[in-house]
Length: 217
Image (cartoon, rainbow, N blue to C red; front, top):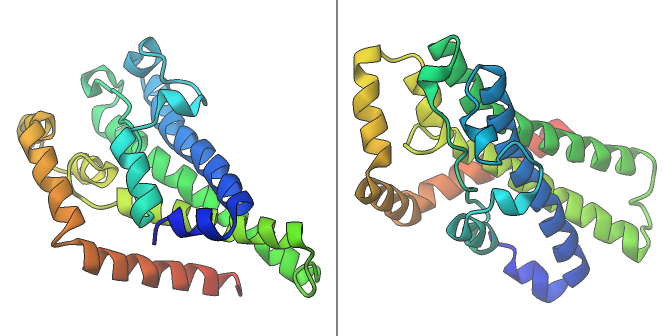
């Protein structure tokens, strides 16, 4: 589900969710950039991507997708894996960094909601407390969705590079060329928006349900 209905029903909650998501996207891409630097590749730093400024990371289509359907992407951080001190380890760590950050944000927000529930703040909540709880729940849900979505082993999503880090090295040049092919990227996105959209949405809904159930929410 996208965020546009929230804009119509509660503009304040919409604004809070967008602010959290801008920070979440920035942290996701910053995670890729900073771990790439730690692993020996300064490409992202040289292009100004080791920053928490969300506007350095936003992708127009990916941001629109979050508003419309509830999952999307930011502008990929440029990396040059041959620069990594340990190629396979670097590829794995850099690829999973953003996913871990999204999971941590979702967990933090779920813990805040759990604390609000346990403390009684949600028994008879004031208007602003209710808005905060609603924004935290939606932002947690979308961060969880972003993490799971990016785990898909479909180039250019992070999951494909995580899988790639375990594949034979002789396959890697073909994978990099595939990712660089704009036609492939268009076809992959069309599949995600059409054929795979319904099963993916159902799976994401199941993951969200299990996640919040785990926190007693």
